[in-house]
Image (cartoon, rainbow, N blue to C red; front, side):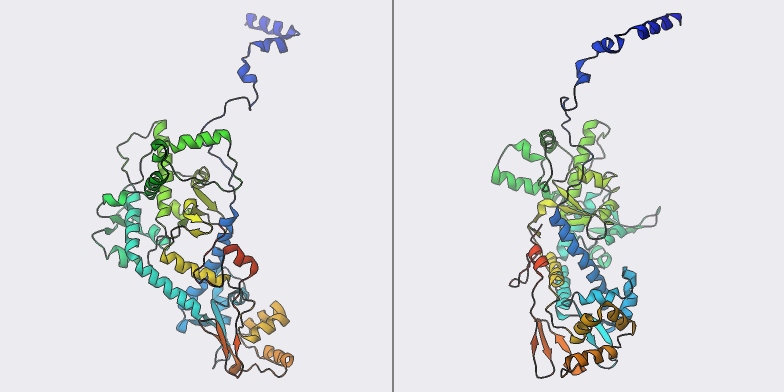
Length: 483
């Protein structure tokens, strides 16, 4: 103890100790961070770089989701029509406030038609002929691709470790994989040689299990892409054997060491998503790296099985335990922004939609299918401008004169527009607004009046939305072209 105190006092009394005693420290610790060697591995925490093309795509999807809710509501009503006053009350279950439902359907006159009931003399809402034709076309496309949907479901079950998935999880994502609403009976029970439905004793939940593992279904989509690129472009086999297509979003900063990290990751071997890994030792560091890359390949294959090559992150999380996916899926996918893109638009940031970047080019699928094209026709109807569509003149005139307050009174009175009728009659003078002058829109986009005069509509698109998504008047099967 005395020796320690004597040494410490001598150090305190020395004047040059504070600087000269540090001369023994190696120079490596005195280097600046820029002079130190950086890691050549992909960083785990990365900031998400926005791609406005995909975000604009999801803004249109937000409108389509609301429109589809109203379509389902109208199809469940007698004669597929409902009074405007009752529609406002039922729309509150969708998150609409008072009087917002009537304003919403007026924004999409190519999807919803507002007309006056010939007997009750109140306003009703129904689907237009174009909208009904789109729904029928989607149903036909869904039935036509049912054999492909059966193959998708078989491959989806093979992605799981045990070859089984919960029925409820598949039901939630049925539209993403092109399955009908009654797929439990029309697909699972109809093909007993492929699927088996049973109840778990522990959880009492229904599960779908694949009956037989077909080796032909264990080929991933990325393997076909690698083979095609290798035959077309050639190159070194080791650079193509385990690689993925990488297309980073605009503004993504790629440094020198990040390029080296991506190059090393592309050459890293991994176990295939359909391969059984129960016999491997996964405790080593090399095995963990292979499992991380296998998780990327599993999500890649999962997105490849969907109809539109996109799915919400929350639905992927349902298959996390069955497919050995990491816990923090969002942070995990942000490490590979050249392969996937996560969009938070479309539902006030509550849902995260994951896109497969290599499947899209200029806003449309590189290999579209009939079901995808049928669903995109609804987006075309939504994007059509309501400004020059000649609908019921009473709605346009009292909307311009009275504004939102008059519309609210109009809907609140149960569609009794006698006061609005008298106001418009005084303004128009000789023009009569009786029920005989009602305007009906047919599927060809024409508007006919029962009186001598004819009127036609000019289906033009708004300059902003039509240019953003490449919708033209000539092509009926146009799709989004801004991504």
